[in-house]
Amino acid sequence: MSRLSHSQRLVRYAVIALTLAALAAAFAWTAGWIHWPGARAVLTPNRLVDAFERSAGKHPGFRRNHAKGICVSGYFDSNGNGAALSRASVFERGRTPLLGRFSAPGGNPAEDDANTTVRSFALRFTMRDGEQWRTGMNSAPVFAVRTPQAVYELQEAMAHDKRTGRPDPARLDAFFAQHPESRSLRDWLAAHAPASAFYNASYYSINAFRFTNARGATRFVRWSVVPDTPYAPYAPYAPKDTADSKSGDPDFLAHSLRVRLQSGPVRWHLMLTPAGAGDPVDDATRAWPAERERHRIDAGTIVIEQAQSQIDGPCRDVNFDPTVLPAGIAPSDDPLLAARAAAYAVSFDRRTREEVHAGVKPR
Image (cartoon, rainbow, N blue to C red; front, side):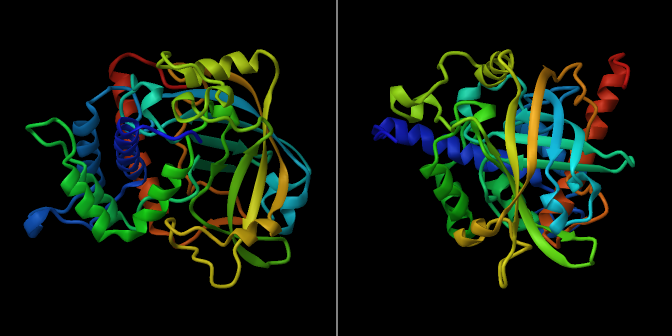
């Protein structure tokens, strides 16, 4: 990566901080665990989503986070190797249809893609027996904080100062000092330039899940999807001869995907990484040792063939709740999994009701 000027470093720091807040919003849930100062009221999922709407603006009909995105469809071509870890039928040899959605964190559907440092990839696999596997992945392998309480505290730290209209750096620094676990994601974002496109980024489950195979053996697993297309960094973060995205287009991520698909499908390998003894399976801020990757299993190929507008595409009415799982995959005790399920449900309910009121027919 090329050396950044002082002003570029400041801009990048600000973008990373905003990304942390947006990611926290995506995973947040309280369900009675968090109280307002003075314990005057319980911060319910609805109240928390209200706060997201105030910070990003209310955009009826759109998701409260990851508001800007694009639908995609294709299939998963399983090679049968995943059956060693899970009895889920999706890992049987053969083809499973899927639909998905690429996006970036944030509640504003008009956000400039240049302001984002993380890409996200959500998928819904639909098996022949009617079971589904839904997953939401990020292009960073770890999360900012471990608990819903810390998520709420990060949101408070990111509140805009009335005088400047921007987050107060002192409050943000105080939060980071109180939450050293956030260092993992901050360091990763500082060291990894964002991908220049949706289709050349790797994506990670972040949370661990419990896999059970046909013999009843159980392992905790994290997964990733690794692109066949070589990674390239987004232009402002990289030497000119290594970046393939062009600045100036606020929607370059979706536009470049559509152009790429004109020449054929794009592919990722679904890699399953089992935990080792002592690896944390309930803490999304902690990466597993690098040597775990030597034992990961290539379970097959995710193939994306088409892209569609999120306004009327097939992903519009899908809630990518990561706790919707087939037999053979179960959630771990990571508190952020329940958090994500509840926050997504509130967002889904609000935006679909808004569409009905606007006269948009559900699918």
